[in-house]
Length: 241
Image 1 (cartoon, rainbow, N blue to C red):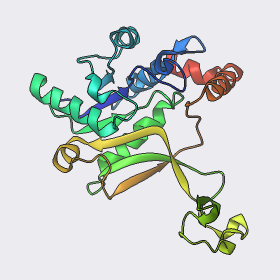
Image 2 (tube, helix red, strand yellow):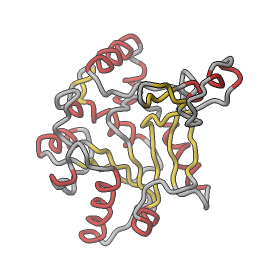
Image 3 (cartoon, one colour):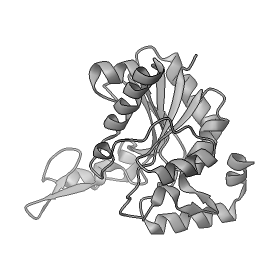
Image 4 (cartoon, one colour):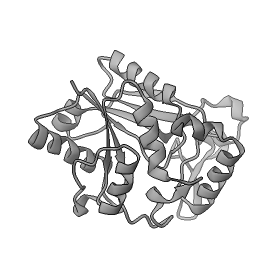
């Protein structure tokens, strides 16, 4: 029985880094890292790449992913949402395979370096929770968000309070609670919740804290990560050997 399906979103047409999802990172296309990690995880039943590109699809197949469908162009733009491609995938499974997996994972290619055991633990944690609506991986921000600002009409506005009186943002860092940011390591959803609520995350999302990871959105981040891998090839070898 198919219970856990990893879906790797890999639309074409990235603007920040041209063809980012298939750009070679130490000799492997970026999306191949997410495919390799998902295929090694013992508690993932199927590994799907959701793409709008035949070329991307052929590359994904080379690395062992399934491409049962191509994503429609109307949900493959810069402004398309994760909810759209997950609903498309789930509806396709229902219509063509009479299948509704219990859990679906989002493994973004832009966070390529994952440890398989971390993925497996996240899945088991989410399975063990009856009340959680989703699980999202996060990492601690290097600077607490309580010390950050917006700017409104030229004046600083404390982001966590909405106050223009910013004295409370200038205490010692240790005075504030830690804050966290999503990092794309792994997100897990319940198919039933997505289809019934028309949402991905809901209001009871398990926090899954990981070590800091590099997300690739710029060519500079791409080059930095390539350097990091070349300095420690064990990370890459764990995925591809």
